[in-house]
Image (cartoon, rainbow, N blue to C red; front, side, top):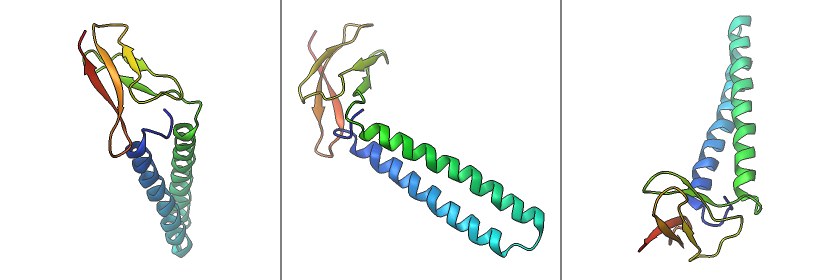
Amino acid sequence: MSARGSARDLARLREDLSFEEEAVKQYGRMGARAVDPEVKELFAELIRGESGHRRGLRRVIERVEDPATPVVLFCPLCGWELDFGPDPQEGAVAKCPMCPGRFALRLSEGDDWQLERLEP
């Protein structure tokens, strides 16, 4: 999905990224103060894990912000994917391939894509 229409998703991803970055710093400080080699290694392992989470979140954020990523939402009637392509305009219409649902793409005041059900 493109960054346009994904404000809430991006905000949550950035909050998670901030948490992971802070965890790496905290574990680094705790590991530096640890005396026991096993405790030091435990903090080093925690840092490696959190660093992996951080890298993963950065990749997801980049993908969401990539204009080539399609906007895909799920049919509220059956759960099937509705692919609006990489740069849809507000009002774009999609028919669910699995059920009789037809939907228009709307941009909320909070800059999130929403589906408006249309009459069949």
